[in-house]
Each structure stands twice: as structure tokens, then as C-alpha cells.
Image (cartoon, rainbow, N blue to C red; front, side):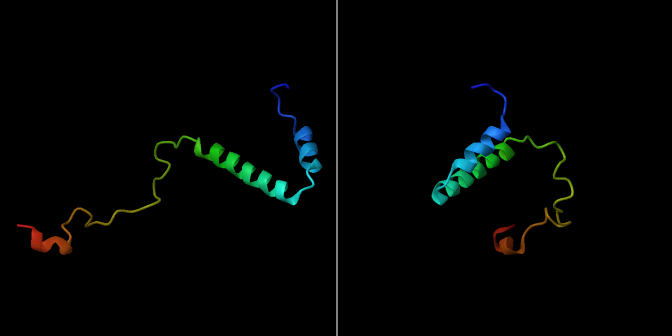
Length: 70
């Protein structure tokens, strides 16, 4: 088997599947492959910039811990 992706061969093999159960298994397997593909992407520095905002009083002591502070 050569290393080139042969899309018509893949499609032909999928079309030969008659069992609905096997078709469902194939969809689940393809979803797993796509998840692996997406999870291997390396995030670029700064890609999350602007997606969240820290409040101005983030470093201030919490009122809930007032009793435990000097």
C-alpha cells in the first residue's frame, strides 16, 4: 500500500458499508481522529490575548478571609 492518500478509494470503501451500526462506529472513529488532529496543534504565543480580563482588584485581599488576616 503506498503512502499517498487515495480519497476515491476511501470513499468507495465507505460506500461498501451497509450496516448502520458499522457506519456509526466509523463516524465515532473519525471523530476521534479529528480530535487527535486538533489537539496536536501547538498554540502560538499570544493566541489567547483579549479572551479574558482580570479585574482591577485581583490582588486585593478577599473579604471572606478578613478574620484570618493580621
